[in-house]
Amino acid sequence: MICPCGSEQPYEFCCGAIIAGNKPASTAEELMRSRYTAYSLTNIDYIISSMRENAAKYFDPISAKKWAQSVKWVDLKILKTKQGQSDDNIGWVEFKARYKENGKMQLIQELSEFRKIDSKWYYMDGKRL
Image (cartoon, rainbow, N blue to C red; front, side, top):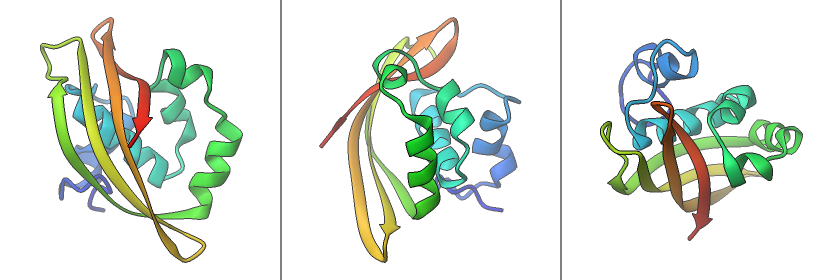
């Protein structure tokens, strides 16, 4: 299976390895891609494990799972990144994710904030654009 994140790489060597815990996300963008992939596969446990602070505080796993199961994910486009490289401790990723809900194309555009805590990237918060 090709990874849903749009990398055109095999899932098991891309986001699959990160989601399974076989390799850490080395950049904020890699974590962003793995989170998109986890939503597309309805892996809410991974979503929970990949967030901290405001993102975790306000996250409702039951609603998130229901919603993720009800939509068909179409694609992810990374628009830009700021910092978030392997030697950074903070980074931002702006992305667009398209999905179909009730037969209608929908779009999420967000500027996401990521931080590295104890050498591991986490999603901290996002601002819808």
